[in-house]
Length: 99
Image (cartoon, rainbow, N blue to C red; front, side, top):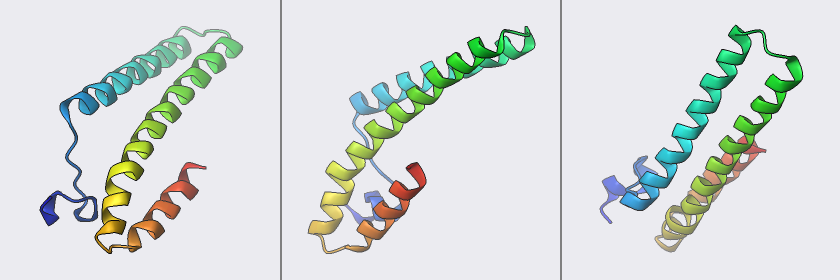
């Protein structure tokens, strides 16, 4: 893979199937967020809004897990094999932000 296509160059080439899966997850999350906005506009009961918010947060966490798994299996492994060990520091920083 050329350098401009690597994760270190801040660009990742994804397969069409992965793009589709990630885009579908994001579309569902967008719908959940729009639903939250509507619930607030319509003065929905607080607990109902909180439950919907928890569902949206769970969906976003699931999105992050899928993307992180792919990043580790492809980008991180490749970069380490190619001697770019600084990817480990980047990964640790990312994990700290996600936790």
